[in-house]
Image (cartoon, rainbow, N blue to C red):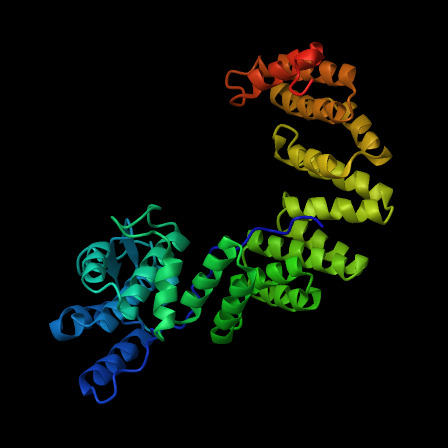
Length: 413
């Protein structure tokens, strides 16, 4: 089977504006009243007022559960941030959304001090607190998800949010976001069963989460549980809006349908993937495989040539085609593609170099040394005329030419 799309590490901020908290301690009227007030402010979009309410009350701010809520407000409802350390918040007007004002010009107010310093000090003081573990996990994961925080540890603390969230979960503190991140941690470790279990827990809290559904479909596909994969990838497609994720989801749906022997449905999904993102590599390779398996020769040739033609001067698309050939071998259809490409008249040295380098690779793969040498030399001559040739291209092609000229010097000979 062909490789499906990438695992989704980012999930949209689809959580409700009301911060999810565990119930206040039984019989503690201070916490119950404070939480109700804070959640009412957040629900009304009064994010600055909610954060200020916590910071201005030392008795509240000393409690880990309110540090957790404060962290949630800052990292999900900020108007802008400085290095994901300082956060500016705003009380929204009725009908405004935080997405509409985030990063836009306006009057915002910084709240508190550096959040990373606060969390570090509190966590070092009380490393077993489930609330502080959650807060630290959220700070790290939200910063990673938006790309706002420089990757790496927080001083001497691990940069991996999964273990913090897992510790909080084991003490009853979790939500859809943290459960997703725990699942993702297990997923990256290759622990499929635990990853599936936590993706399911996350979806129980937030059924329409696109990335949780996509990743769960991916794992079910790998396990061969195609009917479950089919259901979850369909749910991800309903939620995705951006072209890249949508294309990956269509590509995965195509692979699932291929596994279910639904060739027409698979072709439709894979074509939709390439419609959403013309250069999607997974969809291209899978579609070539489908056309080859079903003997649709004209479609195979047209798709291969059309994909390469997206940019003759960029090796990305041709590399995808060559990688497919390396895994699956060459047929008469590929020789037709090769002849058609040889008949092209490239525009400029960049196109000539890229095109003939990859045509050389096609000949090289089937041990046609004479054709490979001729094409590599043409590519090399073209690239040498460029002021800024692709880094490493000239020595790499020159080295391969030398090996083909002197076969006894090739590795393994």
